[in-house]
Image (cartoon, rainbow, N blue to C red; front, side):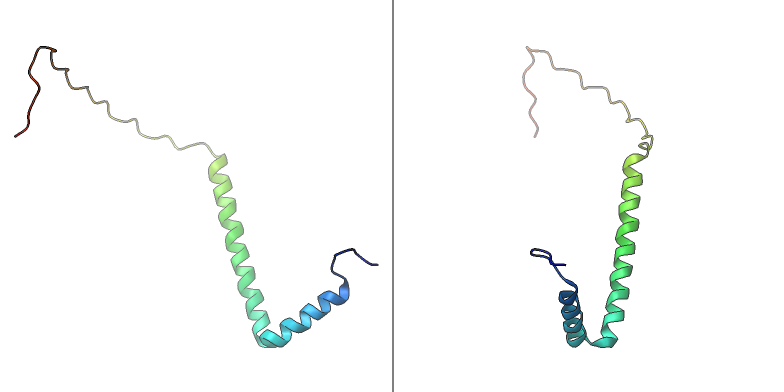
Length: 82
């Protein structure tokens, strides 16, 4: 079974041996546990975001109506602030 430009089973074996040599047998389970925890957090956050975007938008309180300021007559002099 030869895969063109792919990983064969013995490639994975070599990668596993290198990982054990680099990180040690004690560090690998801790690293895998931390990675699993991170993936669970990521999954729960993406699920929450998906539910938030699919759900109906919460009803917002209507904005208070503000009456527009009366317009100055065209023949009135411009206002100056002191």
